[in-house]
Each structure stands twice: as structure tokens, then as C-alpha cells.
Amino acid sequence: MPHAERGMAVGLFGGSFNPPHEGHVLVSEIAIRRLRLDQLWWMVTPGNPLKSRRELASLPDRLAQSERLVHDPRIKITAFEQTLGTSYTAETLAFVKARNPHVHFIWIMGADSLKTFHLWQKWREIAATFPIAVIDRPGATLSFLSSQMARALANARIDEDDAGVLWKRQAPAWTFIHGPRSTLSSTALRAKGTEEG
Image (tube, rainbow, N blue to C red; front, top):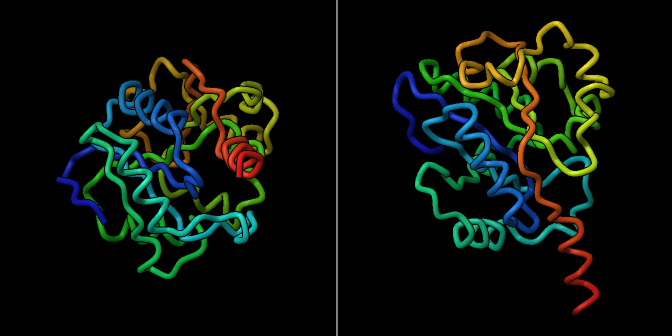
């Protein structure tokens, strides 16, 4: 787990990064700027309970690709979930919170993940652990209005103009951040690789 000093604002951006791409970097840059983060951790997961393991590149490969792609020293590439042995985000976030009680964390997700967030195990527990910032993604802009999570936590939503102080809010609290969007997706890149291979 990366080191964070007391009082820092740190974004947690989890995913399979299969493969990592410039769209992930763009989401990270937007989050750092708009949320006023000191660090952002890419939590590269060993696996994803909602996805097939057959299509997942090895963890060392995904970590190496991520390291080559990221140049901002504020973005930390990590795979500490593997040593935890957790499969679910709620368990990981509970561990992060217990280990770093004096750090202000924000869970970062793309708007495409917001659509299915209610299918995640203990999604309400996740929302109650750290504030959440949802970053706009192509084709998912309206998910902040239509998703089950957005409807269930409508009263906890703050305006994106206040995103810079989201880290000060007690969970549940969330915001939707509009901005530049990349059309890249790991799914499309994998499909293209299969066609070329």
C-alpha cells in the first residue's frame, strides 16, 4: 500500500486495467485537478467478480503496462489487494480506512461503472465508507440521473462546483464530474488485439 501523510486527500481508483489506457490517465488527471487530490492510487485488482477471468491478462503484465503509461508522480500504481486476499471492494476499502485513519480518501469511478454499481457486493457499505467521485465517460453521462445508486443517494449528492471539498465530507457523499472524455475502453482494446492477433 502506498504511503500517505496525515491529512492528505487521496483518490482510490480501482479496476482491472485490462489493459490500462489513456482514458484511465485522463480520468485520473481530471480527478486530481477537480478534487484537489495530493495522490491518486490505481488499485489494480487481481480479478473482478463481475468479469470472466479468461480474458484477464496477468497481474504482473497489467502492473507493468500501468507503470509504463503513467508519468505523474502523484499517481501510485499498486496491487495490494492481492496480498489482502480480498475479492470485493467493500472489504478493501474497510482495510484501507483502518490502516489510514488520518487520510481523507475518495473512491473514484467512471460513469460507466455507476450504471452497475448497485450490483457490487455491499455497494451501500462502499458508499458509506468514503465519498465517491464519478467521472464522466462516453455514453454514460446520464447515469448520474438514472442509476440505482444515484437515485438511492440523491440527497447525498453535492454539486460538482464543490468537488474540491468532497474529501471534507462525511460519507455518504458523492458528486458527478463532467469534463473531457476519452472514447478508449479496455473492452474495445482487447477486442482489437484479438482481431489483430
